[in-house]
Image (cartoon, rainbow, N blue to C red; front, side, top):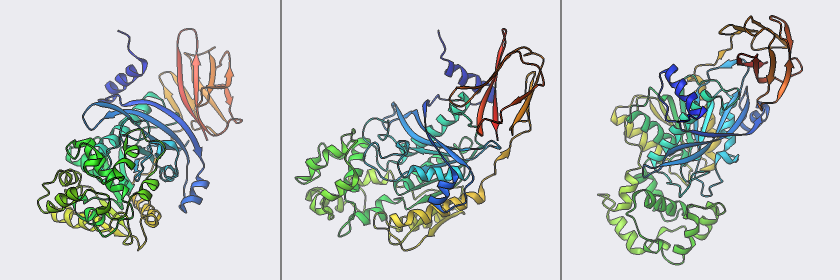
Length: 479
């Protein structure tokens, strides 16, 4: 039986490190590099590192328990001096088109880049049913938000072991979670899933900062969408379509729940293959009053069951509430009181409920009277600042590298370095850049001779020593 080289590398690494891997990683594609000066202008924060962004494709589990694929954006700091950054997760807000996701380098991807420029390896899942993932997105379904996130973290850790992302060092084992709007729900769901499934050893949550999320879907969120008018009626259809996908007992066709012509209007938006129709156009075609587009009998039965939550829509919503649990790690929930899309009461109810459950480090943080979009910058800036006060700073690289009978020093390198070895005398030496191009080559190597790389740009390179009997590859950092 032939063993794939990646599978062998993972097996070898798991034996050495004592870690069990499910081989989630499928592929990585480089997107671009952004300088910290650009990200400082965007955010107003003092940022240190250039950021490389990759699209990651990985294996995860669908809502029915079957294997599927998902994608996401991954941002890493470019740092010759530091190793051991924490991981930060950023969960994105509501999107309807499959391409409106972080891995497609949208505006929201810059939020992840800003955190990365501050010294985090940033994971941004696209979620199930978005990006490269097939089918309809299970909107505000807490379990799949969490599993898609955790499997992406596993995938990037595997990519590091496989050397698939040049210059990437292992993370330091600390995990920070944040997200905005639906992403607030996803961040809370991920934290809750980790603690309730005893995964803190694998995913060491230092803190989470959900922002403007619908944590109490059956309460504060339901009150908002059932009000006299709601600014984003498309969210109502989205959540019903998603929960039908997950639970399968809400309706048989859109005409069962929606009045004409809205039953036909919404269908192409939720066919599981929507690349062109956005949430804005759906909101424009729906009335802002729920009774104008939801069938009278459905709405009457739904409202009649508001006390005992016996209606299947209530039950699906209740299964995805994530305000009522007992966190052992710190949580700050950021909100604005003018939020027209996700009521700020979600944060206040979650705070009160968690404290009543016995939580000792949970707080709802008021960030002004702004509307939903106004609250993004102050909330995430505060989350970033809070994470900075809690994280462990990266460790500075060692002065040289010693592997087997080869010593390379100094490393990181300013202009020149030396190699001490007896085993590779007379070898051919090649230095490759991150794209695999040979940038320096030398034949008949003499031990301890000086090698000049002053003409190379700062970054990560690979030193290949090769003779007739064996070869070795070492990583070089050009400062």
